[in-house]
Amino acid sequence: MTIHHLSKSPSILNTFISEIRDHKIQKDPLRFRRNIERIGEILGYELSKELASKTVEVITPLGTKKIAVPTKELVLCSILRAGLPLHQGLLNYFDTAENAFIAAYRHHPNKDAAFDIVVEYFAAPALEDKILLLADPMLATGQSLVAVHKAIKKQGIPKEIHIVVVIASQEGIHFIEKHFPKNTHLWIAAIDPTLNEKGYIIPGLGDAGDLAFGTKL
Ligand code: URA
Image (cartoon, rainbow, N blue to C red; front, side, top):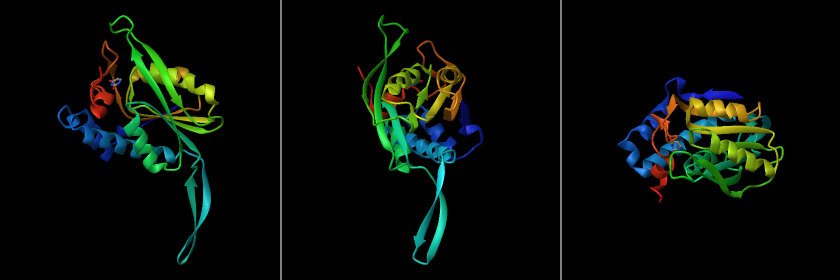
């Protein structure tokens, strides 16, 4: 697996990351969603450099120009619901991509911190031999992404997977490395050291789904 950690060097990306983490600024859901979307745009731009490209000849009003452009044959798959703003950011740049959505949530059978992942709704085009971008803003334990990958494989084996994440824990990264194919790319805006006893990333930002869309029962 190739890991790309984008906030290692300071850039405007870090401004957006600091705003989604900030306990005051993150309370504005419109700004929170838009910042996640902007982070998705930056991650999308960076990963576009790794995609296969082809040269097209463009006719301008005054001549022609050959330009190397990345492939447009992508499927964007997001995990509902927290993945939606990240999905939108990727879709802003990969505007002709096909789209897939999958619902995965933590189920606490004993009402304590222990949980398993339930995968439910899944709507996707054929995935066989396609380039799959898998968007999930928070890579905490990595269990949701692995459960989603297992479900997705029933719809075909992608030739390449790019996992797109806003904040990842070290533990989540190791788990993903163990369970995804070797040619997977993991695109991460920021890496945090630990998880708390409930499986939340520390310092992280809290619950990305709640911040974007409101609390749930
Ligand atoms: N999901 C979140 O929204 N936040 C975390 O810290 C972990 C999982």
